[in-house]
Image 1 (tube, rainbow, N blue to C red):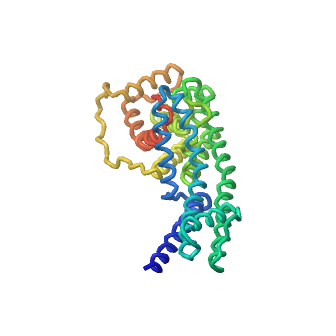
Image 2 (tube, rainbow, N blue to C red):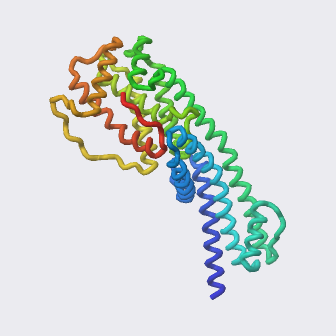
Length: 349
């Protein structure tokens, strides 16, 4: 009976150690999006605590200051949790190898893990090998996180640079209409290339970095009013309006940017278990949906663009239907990610 229990303890300990190492490798080394159960438990537990604290804030600024700590704290907590699981796993292994009671095995495990050398195994070569392997794994897990921190912050800096530049172009209102006005004033609505290519590359990097390193989604902008989700919404709304409302030749670079943006936003949201609405909406009628707040925002945006001298399509109803069709490709994922990350409120056009 005791022998069977020790075999079970050895296998359980080995499972904890191997699963933790694989979690670390899948988190920072594997170049694809992987949902790691152990990491999810850690981040979910920390998120619950931060959400509870943020709910006490009376203003968005207060809540934002609290949630700004969530991603950094979660990232630092990862190796602590990994080391803790490895410690318990090796404790079970040392007990199975006959190194004494659980108290002594726990001291041996932590002495090896933290390379203290205060406790040494004494029951043969296998236990000694396990001790050295634990010391190696402890250093490896810490090194993995430290080596990938620059990568994480480089991706964050590139993301925020584009957001800051976008903020300059949209003006104090940070709106879609403000961005279209800027584009119109530069005379580049029909043939703008460089700006749309830059935003396309930004979306491609967002898709890659925010699924392979999902904690990046929760790193907040330095300014409380900014957010990568809000920036994504403004760029996609701008493209949708230009493609549906503005009377100008189609810009192929804008089309590519719109496709890259919808793909990126939807893939990031699906990584966080977003379930898109797959039901086909009822086709809109020819009558004006005057009671629809979205349509009222649309009309207001068209009026502001017309006053700014932007050429518009003659058939506003056809433009509205086309705008709605384009908007359905991304708006669900945008709102889901905004709620998930407690982003600033998505403004109307």
